[in-house]
Structures are given as C-alpha cells and as structure tokens.
Length: 97
Image (cartoon, rainbow, N blue to C red; front, side):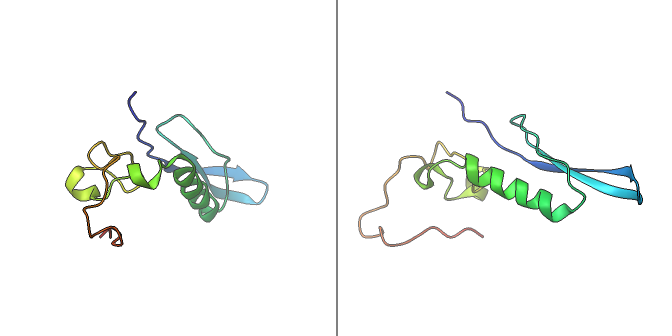
C-alpha cells in the first residue's frame, strides 16, 4: 500500500468583513483534508503543525536522511523504515540539518 505524502499548504486571500478587508488563511493538505478558516496566520500554522504530528508515521519509519533520500522528516521512508541501528550505535540519535 503506497503511503500518502502530506504537503499541507496555507492558502491566503482577502475577505470583506464588517470592519473592512482582512486576510483570511486556511490550511489545505494534499491528502484532501481542509481546516478552518482563520484571520490570524499563526492559527493556520498551528493547524499545519498539528496535522503533520497527527499523520506522521512511527519514529522508526520516518526518514533519517531527508536530503539524501528526497523526503521530508515527517514522511515514511522505504529506505529507513524498519532498519535497526548498527551495533554499538543504539544510543545515538539522528540529527537533521
């Protein structure tokens, strides 16, 4: 089964309100999920971060080398998934640049 790559983007447009024009923000993901509209961009940033946390695969399946493997840190990576650490290196954690 192919894994869905989530690419939530914040869409922005002008909207007429009772107090004049205002920017309106909404997060839409490539998976088809849409979130509430907000007048504050920070609320949409929170929606995007929450969505990425909710859909992220287990840490063992996430990409440890996103640049080299062409993935994002929150994606499922077929190269990294299910691989154990080398003997003697279990205590080390991957760092992402």
